[in-house]
Image (cartoon, rainbow, N blue to C red):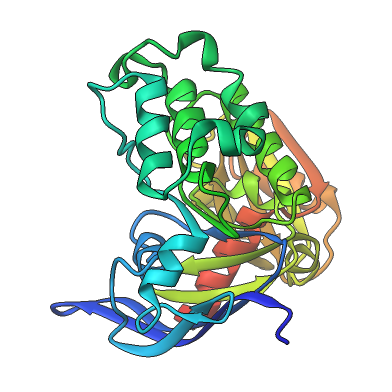
Length: 306
């Protein structure tokens, strides 16, 4: 028997002339927390809609728990819990009414499966009589996850669940996902936030309908090809342009309040500092750093363009 909950083979999908997915192939192990990481327009939502049987692939095939997403769509909808990117519950129903409604659709009750959502739902249960449209972003998120879980799914598919919520709610949500994973549920979660990649067992980095890499976060970082330096000066506006004139520069990209400089070979910090001082920068800070997932993602994008 396959050790994978999700198997995707050469799946493509187009909308008119736009290729949303270009031959995607993935395997997700059972009880894994798998992240699909990429910016808007990468194809994440299209992929998830195919996996939940809401869209048909133009080519290729995909299955969840052995069920084909096209031929076995009824079975797919029984075993999958889906949380779309936009809050899609009923704004004019209360918290409790929404949960009861989704339980009823799947032929169950809140009481029967309360143990599945207790740790999550108990945080918003004091507001069970409040209409869903009046909830905060974090509370909406917890209600949507409770509704996706109430029928005891085997696979949980979450499309950008932390987009637009505060940092505290983001952390709480990922803590909840780890708890659900420990219950044996396979979880696929998409996000545009590169820092969330480290919270997954394995990630697929996705851009323009393609998978750039599919590995553990640690392994992806270890594949980064160049020495990397964090640079800060008193003239951050000119810094990326000036660094492109350094002989060994491979890339110079803005990251928050600094510029990450990748060079073709190990370079003394003093050489970089002296170069920038000669360029007219008066205050210069250079620090050797380890790459993050975002550095790797940007480098992989460059490789695909080569």
